[in-house]
Length: 118
Image (cartoon, rainbow, N blue to C red; front, side):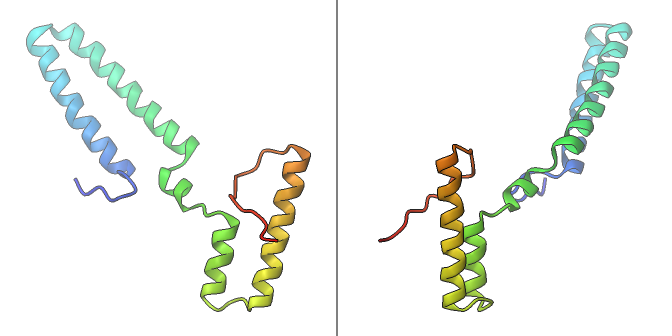
C-alpha cells in the first residue's frame, strides 16, 4: 500500500478492511457454517458504516497535523519576507501578551513554549 508519512487515506483503510472481511467470512463459511458467516458479514457491514461515520465526524489526521501554532506561522511569514523585522517583533509581542493574559486568567491554551527575553 502507498501510505505516506501522514498515514493511510480512507480508501486504503476500506480496501484493507474488505480484504480482511472476505478472509473472515470465507473462514466462517468453511469452519462454522452459513449462519455464522451471515452474522459476521452483518457485523462487518455495520463496522464499515461506523468507520465511515467516525472519519467524517472527527476529520482526517492530516488536517490535525496541518494546524501550526501562531508563532511558527509568524516565523514562516518573516522568513518569507512578508513581514519586516519591526512587524515581526510587534506581532510576536502581541502573541506573548495574549499568552500571558490567558495564563493569568487560567484559560487552557495550546502551550507556545515561549518565554520573554528581558
